[in-house]
Image: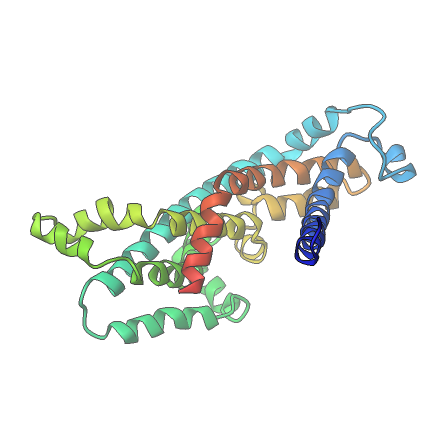
Length: 278
C-alpha cells in the first residue's frame, strides 16, 4: 500500500533527479557543442550548428595547434603550475603560523591579509605597470607569476586558515613531545590533514590562473609570452572567419581544466564546504 509520505518522497526524488539532470545538460552541453563544432567545416557550422558533424575533421584541431595554441598552452601551463605552487605553499605556511603558532598581533596580521581581498586589480593596474617596467619585469614570465600569486594569497590564506582552526591541538602537542620542530609538524602532520582544502585551493587557483585575461593582456605584449585567453583572442582576430579552428582552439584550452576538476572534485567539494563553513 502506497502511503502519502512514500508518494511525496517519490515525487521529491523525481523532481530532484530531474533538476540535477537538467543542470548537467546546461553545464555540459555548451562544452560538447564547442568540441563538436571544432570538427565541422564553415558551411556546415553555419548551416546546422546544432547537428553532429558530417565528417570528423581532425585537421581543424591540428591547424589550431599549429597556429599558436601549442605555444599559448605551454605558457599557460608554466604560469599556472608555478603560481599555484607558490600561492598554496605561502598561504598554507601563513595559515599555519596564524593558527598553530603564538605570534604577536596575529589578529592584526589576519586583518591586513584579508584586506587584500578588497584591492581590485583594475585599481592597481597603472602603478603596477610602471613598477614592473622600472624593475625590468614587464613582458616576462615573472610578472604574471608575481601578480597571480600576490592577488590570490589573501583568499587562499582565508580558506586554509578557516580549515586549520578546527584541527585538534592535541596533534601539535603530541608532535612537540616527540621532539618535532614546527616545520616538521607543518609538513608531516598538519599539511596532510589539510588535504581536502589544499586540493580545493589548488583547483580554484588553477581556474583563476588558466582563465585570467586582464593581467595577461596588459603585462605581456609579445606573442611568446601570451597565455591561452589572450592567445585565443589573437587567434580569433587573425582567423575570425575560420570558426571551426577557433572552436577547436577553445576546446583544447578547456580540456586540461575539465580533467583537473573531475580528478579532484571529491576533495574539492569537501574542502570548500569545510573551509567556508567554519
